[in-house]
Amino acid sequence: MQLLAIGINHHTAPLALRERVAFPLDRIKPALQLLRSVWRPNVAPGEILRDSAGLELPPLEGLSAEAAILSTCNRTELYCVTDDHAAREHAITWLSHYHNLPVEELGPHVYALPQSEAVRHAFRVASGLDSMVLGETQILGQLKDAVRTASEAGALGTYLNQLFQRTFAVAKEVRGQTEIGAHSVSMAAAAVRLAQRIFDDIAKQKVLFIGAGEMIELCATHFAAQNPRELVVANRTAERGSKLAERFNGRAIPLADLPSRLHEFDIVVSCTASTLPLIGLGAVERAIKLRRHRPIFMVDLAVPRDIEPEVSQLEDVFLYTVDDLGSIVREGNAMRQAAVAQAEAIIETRVANFMQWLDARSVVPVIRQLHGHADAMRLIELERAQKMLARGEDPSAVLEALSVALTNKFMHGPTHALNRAAGDKREQLVELLPDMFRPSGGRYGGHH
Image 1 (cartoon, rainbow, N blue to C red):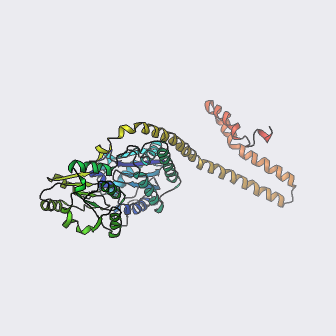
Image 2: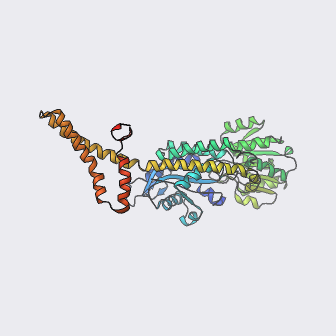
Image 3: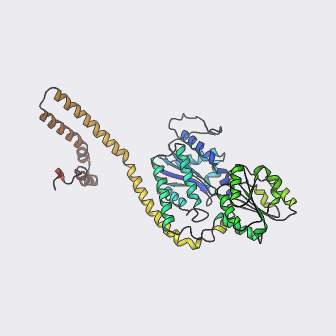
């Protein structure tokens, strides 16, 4: 079995493609369950499978049912276990079909990382080394959520369980032994910096937050520190929106009120899990007209996007997406390069350790087969010895016959292999066989 990580991220794909390949949180578990059924070896040729939403997918062959999906604003990644050389193509086909995308459109943006590359990638992602915000901590929580979801879907097994447990341990080690998070500029802090370029004094502005998740909470914390004139939260779940607003001495409004009240706000920050835009071009046009063309600053941190991209073309509107904030959050990267080098060194050591474990796992089936073969021979000779005892034969003679028969059977394979071998192969066997038959207690016979 081999590990494989495939995906797209902010390094390889534009936002417009990433949002089309994103998995809403409530779709990951059913997607994994479908993936497991697609990978069943007993799927009939030509059979069409459907997920709970009725989406049709063709069956795939040669892949294991171990899988996990990580989907954030910056990446969508599939971690799986496979023994198929065409696994990359199969996985890309599955992703393309699932998101109704042509394979040729998605394929060029996908990275496929086998074995140690997949391990290294997982370690770097969890440690914040592969993030747009170098050293950010949010990704670790998102990865833990992805693993928890995969476990609930019954999609984790020995290999991925071990990979992710070690991934979390490495992330903790990197955080504890380096200053990778020092001087980090978060998306939330970058949004405040951009707003300050548009408005000299945020204390005079009204700020609207759409959503009530972790990213909005971070943004609200940063904007609240600027003491805005008013802070308002609009969320689909009223109770959660009100709870967040109260933390910052703000107020909550129903999400349904957005179209009629958008013009009231100077700064709008949105990050929800909606699969469709919440704010359209027409709504913003009406808001600008009611504002008499006073500027409005908008930040869309959602993937897929909450605000229609065409809004950015309007005068008096300053719209920034998660990718637009990239240059700002990278400004402090140079200050963290020493910590990055230290973190990479830790990761390389842990990758080597994991690959040793993986190599050891690869011989487990052979060891099991050897044990099974030896046990089968033991049972045959034991049955023969029991029959001899039942016939009244001398127990000492029976034990002697049993030991000789077992010895001959156990020695037959190695002796036969040695007699047939020649050249370098024979020399290797001559060197290996004495160790193979050395008792665990020490020298032959157990004497020192």
